[in-house]
Image 1: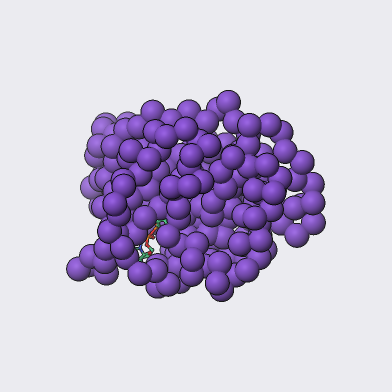
Image 2: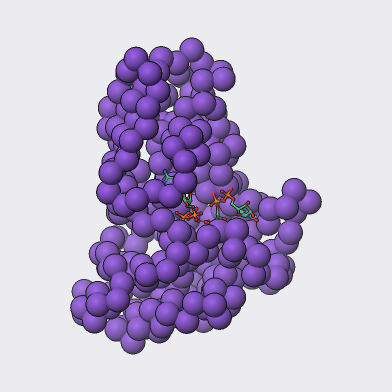
Length: 266
Ligand SMILES: C[C@](O)(CO)[C@H](O)COP(=O)(O)OP(=O)(O)OC[C@H]1O[C@@H](n2ccc(N)nc2=O)[C@H](O)[C@@H]1O
Ligand SMILES: Nc1ncnc2c1ncn2[C@@H]1O[C@H](COP(=O)(O)OP(=O)(O)OP(=O)(O)O)[C@@H](O)[C@H]1O
């Protein structure tokens, strides 16, 4: 069976406090976008993992799909499988690519081997693999809070707009990004702010990671400025970076950004 795990963007991201477990409480809007990996799983004689496309750093046993297999294997009598991942979603981008692979792997195994897991149970497994993973089980626009793994449904449809995603030639690790932020409680919640017209978002909706990441990586700040110059209604870094997205009400001319960056229309 083949599934196509998609990326997400964060519209606003407020890091509100440090938790006793070393993680941070936050609030953000997760929005799924049309940039996808391809994940294939077939029954086999032994467990294996291969990948193509963008190179994935790290050991095979640390790949979130392989970790997902071992997690489910604890509770279910699973046969060995051959996993192949074609990687299109940039890594170290704040797009949740690895997390999407993990969640879609759980969904795929549930369907292929009739594990009978509900969405809520799959979300429980996904949460154990990473804070971002849980979102990709239901994979619809949500307001997320706590570690980013508790959700409230929202109505948000950006299909009438053009979303341009820019990946500068820089990778930011999630750990590095959290290390640079001073948690601050919020006055106005994103849960309400997201209902304002998009033309108002620029004034009120921010990503707390930008301050420190822009200091260390001026080229990322440059991309955001360029998207506004090209006429974006709203532009922001996604998650912990390094990708930056712009929301436009027209097809923008962003040819000039392609010289230095990867550019996607999502
Ligand atoms: C930046 C975001 O992408 C926003 O959606 C996420 O918060 C990151 O989620 P993720 O990559 O799934 O994170 P995990 O793999 O669970 O954790 C990576 C590292 O990020 C930090 N981390 C992550 C999530 C969170 N709420 N607080 C944290 O402090 C921790 O240092 C952790 O060791
Ligand atoms: N299936 C996978 N795809 C990509 N990276 C993976 C995968 N499984 C494990 N990883 C590991 O995760 C690391 C990427 O995580 P990182 O948080 O830096 O980037 P990200 O893709 O932007 O994710 P996020 O949006 O959650 O921050 C890689 O260095 C890699 O070692």
